[in-house]
Length: 155
Image 1 (cartoon, rainbow, N blue to C red):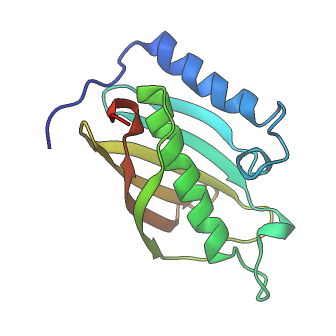
Image 2: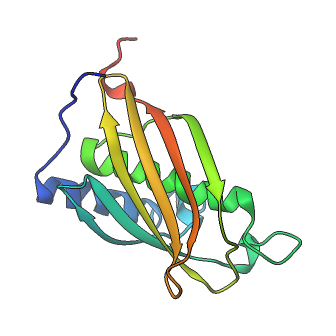
């Protein structure tokens, strides 16, 4: 995979993250990304990472009363997409996600999500995301995923 230039300017990265935050408050607030209500915590340019938190709400639970696997996957996917937007300023469709589940999440838990760009190419981004219970530090789930870089593709 060839090298692809990512943003390193902290102000531009912050502006991209602010755009994502406002997306959850604007005309798209009622859509899926808006109702996830992520709280952006920070980013690390050297690591090409972003950190955010999610609160596990009642509607995120399955019949057994624990965090639904689909919601867990949604948190991971949203984080991965947010990392790409932060460092590239674009939105990219998911190609694949390999999700591994380790511990359950419960209503009221605050989950810290850290996503980082593992590799960025002209056509594909590879992202790793880890989801932790903020209070206990337990790893809840993680994924490795790929995203199609639509920014540089010819129609």
